[in-house]
Length: 164
Image (cartoon, rainbow, N blue to C red; front, side, top):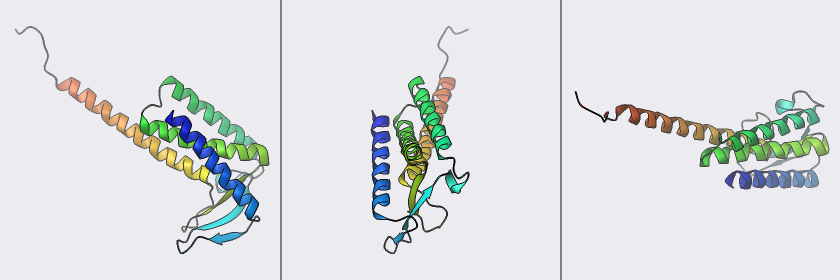
């Protein structure tokens, strides 16, 4: 349930913010967000991250749908389990779906978040995908440590049986 809740929430918030940007800002408009160094800048990207491969939005939409199908497959198979991995997968699927919707409907993705580092321009779907990756890695590390502890405890238990 957590997976579906996060995926739906991310998709809805992403689409809502993109709709607001498209409604209230012209392409190229920039707005500073206080003294944080953050800016909103309306940009339309018909390619992928870093504005690479412009004009291929629908192709990347298909890639996003294949990614979502893969995540659903591994989730159903039981490979994605536990709070951290479910949450991470939910963020990643919600982000991929949010950008796929843009790619299929508008043939481009609406980006608007410019961080103080000045490296690229993102949207909330992109941020969610990054958060999802971090949560998924945390979940994988927790699973690896649990597996290691279980294996270690099995190897240190005394053998029960007849004595010689």
